[in-house]
Image 1 (cartoon, rainbow, N blue to C red):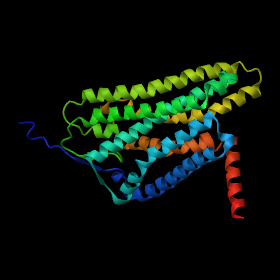
Image 2: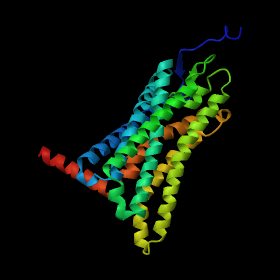
Image 3: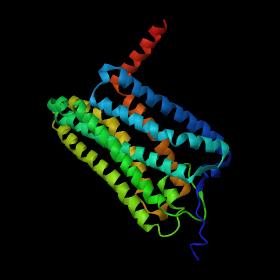
Image 4: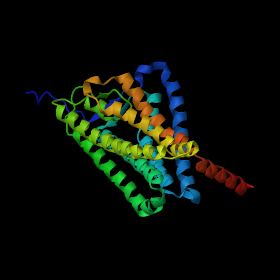
Length: 313
């Protein structure tokens, strides 16, 4: 009898920022500006790293793929979010929601592993500089990137399957601007305990494995830096890691708050603020904090602009 009265929804409605009322157009202008800067900066960084031979090193190789991954992550979320700010609530099909969750989770997991790979790269560069070229050879770097992407896709698929094997009944309104795991899981009916546990385990696997790898790398890095006799040498060594650490702190801070907590603690306004930071602000950190403050990248950017101006002349 209970099964007969259960309605299986084959679509969802994003409520997005409907509670913000007249502020939605202001948010649209703000998010659109940030998104255009993020998209342009990341694409430009990828192009410059590919074209400038001075940036053909493992660190920038990994950075270019991180920018690519962040760009793909934002492409699957922000355009629809901007559309919902202008048009109000939007409908998404059951299959479309599952696809969006898969790709957003996959790219998010890939970002975590790429950040761990970049931490390992800094460890080898600082702790074993004489063996850096032989250890971080092109084949090994490509394998690290490929493993990061493959693992991210598999874990993203696992998270999607854990949620979308559940029936969805009653409300089909997603209190969010994209199909993220917490708000979609809150719409599922029946016993969601095993699925919550599955999401928690997969999230822990992604965040703890990658974060522990970064922590171990930086423990060795810090030990090596403290052994450097000169203050100038220590500052120079630490400066190569400062930007990466900044991105890591923001990235893992937002991700941990979003996914490593029970369903009962979800809050619409707070979760949307964290999600906006994670989807809009964090991808902007890569070109600004990690790249554009780097002298080698700045030199490459100036050369690119100079070459373009000379070409026009």
